[in-house]
Image (cartoon, rainbow, N blue to C red; front, side, top):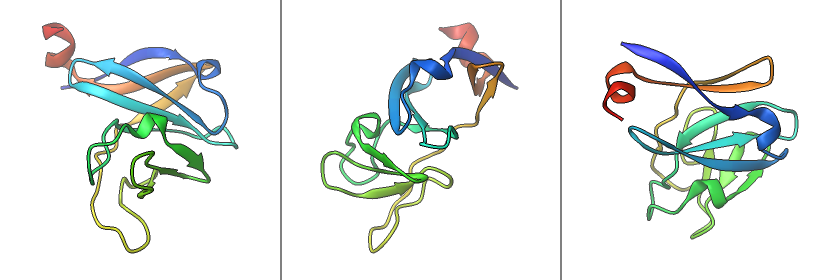
Length: 110
């Protein structure tokens, strides 16, 4: 069963920035675009495991800080000539609060 958990407010993340959030299933990178869209992925590049939350957000993509792999925040797919995919995580904003979707068993186990 899936459930939504609150992880902070949208104001915690600057436009074109990201934050890393620890969840029961691991590190999640939460991104805010220049037009206030919010995305979440595992905080791990599919190439060398670089911390995507430290990457550069541009449009609806992030560039990994280690080797410049560009990842679509909408699909998690590598863009351009690169290959690979990072899992995306459902995220939403309610009255300025950020919520991500996780397995309910993981929340109880934490």
